[in-house]
Amino acid sequence: MPNQAQALVLLSGGQDSTTCLALALEEFPNGVHALAFDYGQRHRIELEQAQKIANIAGVPLQILDTRWLAGLSTNALTDPTLPITHLDGKLPSTFVDGRNLFFLSLAAVIAKQKNIHTLYTGVCETDFSGYPDCRADFIQSLNQTLNLGLAYTLKIATPLMWLTKGETVLLMQKLGHLDWYAHTHTCYEGIRPGCRQCPACLLRLKGFEDAQLKDPLEYRAVTP
Image (cartoon, rainbow, N blue to C red; front, top):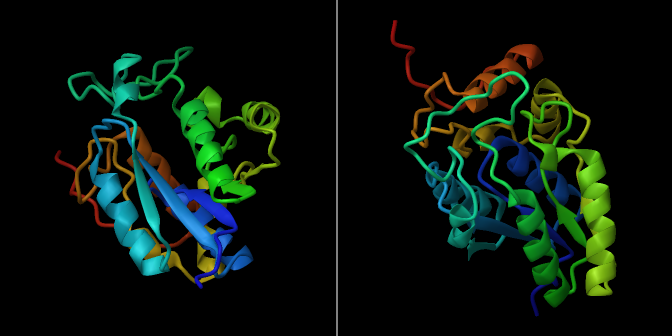
């Protein structure tokens, strides 16, 4: 009989969620299940990368169809015709209203059905790109709400909450899985190699610069 999963990792295929997968496997070596979401994102390639990473890690991946989310709000991640911007005093155009609220709620229901009590998510308040649903207060509040609403004890683990991108890179190096980052997807433009110019690429590159390590991911040359 296969080992029962003990942790559910929200695996987007990005750098932070992949780090969370590595951490979850440290704590639960034989009991990790991964979950990804198809929400109509312009960078859908991240789902392919999530599957590759799950295969490398030897964990099952479930991809949940949540494309209805794209119809609830207007944003640059689900509408490729909109520009990717982050103006002072405003939310980034890539902010998807309710994304983490819905994703964690759906993950909690799946976790309960699988008798899993620990959810891992890569949200971070230190380098959170201006997303309000990546803050510790939100996670703590939602955690309590889910436990009450499901009559079930869950822990939303956010091991990267207070780490910079550079510290996350060094953590992955310590875990011995820095090579996994070559298969992750960060670029909001949904292209590989990455564009090197969108906010997500720039934040990732700064993290590697701060860590004084080379990013194993390939990027396109910047056009003068």
